[in-house]
Length: 267
Image 1 (cartoon, helix red, strand yellow):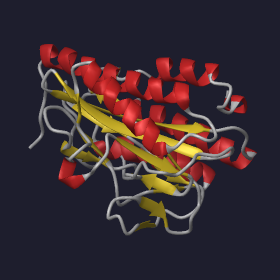
Image 2 (tube, one colour):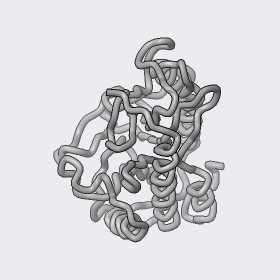
Image 3 (spheres, one colour):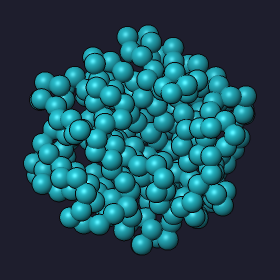
């Protein structure tokens, strides 16, 4: 079932989306070599609850944490833990919060310290592909238009791997709603996009193969060839003419630029 929102509901959901952006911003301020991923998760949960919201991930089908923290070859759903981040790590923070009866779902990939131009390009192009896909989230288009745009930009133009086993989705009163929004596809195919449908558009791209494995924890998804993976995600409301982005990267980017432990070459 596809779920559409009234204008009032979209505004309520925007508050959730902005709070999840603020949560990742707080994480961005702390990212540095030597910090454990579990300490980031604990801070984020406190921040979410202090803002009268609930960490949607915690307890979802048994997931034990508030953040998904995926490092290097980990694509999505990485477990926070005792792992200590180090210079050169590629770290994706992905989380969902629930407030006002709606979920906000957001992801951002950070570079700690210095890395190769090859990885810098992967991060930049994946982030650009998110906006290429978002441009297609307008009334009358189809999910295949979004997927085609992302796949064309990442795989066909740059030779990257596009994860096929995990996809974007609708988001609202439930964390995962219809329709599914793959990062691959054909123009003019898939579900038709309707005014005020809210989508989580989230390219998950690797430097190598699109094939994946799942670790023994039952959650952490890694690239099969252990190539670096990158993941960006926005919540987007389908509108006529131009989509409305409900989440906010600008506050995350500001924190990223101010954190001397994050790679300045990215800009």
